[in-house]
Length: 214
Ligand SMILES: Cc1cc2nc3c(=O)[nH]c(=O)nc-3n(C[C@H](O)[C@H](O)[C@H](O)COP(=O)(O)O)c2cc1C
Image (cartoon, rainbow, N blue to C red; front, side, top):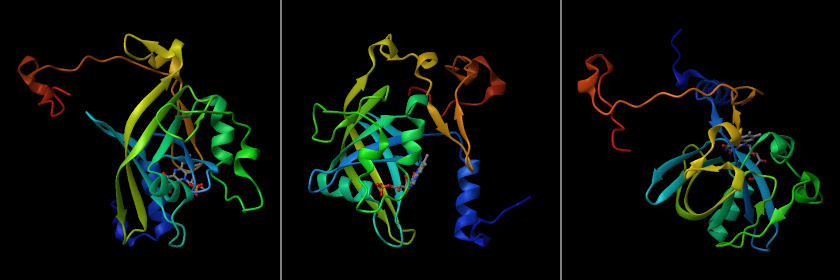
């Protein structure tokens, strides 16, 4: 089947895209509004885009033209925390994506514990295995598509001691939750290792490694 995304209604285009680009990591983002009220919401259009300086990207779709609270808060305060989601945080993360009317305090309902950050005023989520304090590096509004791209610079990591192994995160212990298409999520239960090729000379059939050196 060949599919022209331009032929799809926006809901169909979204459903197809998020079922094709999988698995996606989930950023459970905490942010502060102008009155210091804490907000938390999940974003799976999230990834790392550079390592020096360390940069991440989030994409927040506007709702009927209005910025999502997370985007609004990040633009006004220029800082936020990405809390990595593991199994213990799944329910709160999912609930945090709901629309909360102003009379209901989202943070009171989520059952999460907030801890102070070190470099920024935005608190982090104690239950998360990793918290990443970020400052706003760049905001790129995609006007036609009503999307706010937020590029954040990582200023501080908080990693549970038992997860650190030789300067990196122990991949068997982290157990992050990944976002799949539809209502699917995944745990990472089957890890395998594979060495990278240094040069195509050692294996002419393998082609070149465009990421070599990174
Ligand atoms: C797992 C998950 C991932 C999500 N990823 C995104 C995303 O990348 N971009 C987005 O605009 N909304 C995303 N959403 C929807 C937002 O979480 C939802 O619109 C939420 O109400 C936004 O809250 P806020 O306005 O407090 O930021 C996601 C929801 C879930 C459950």
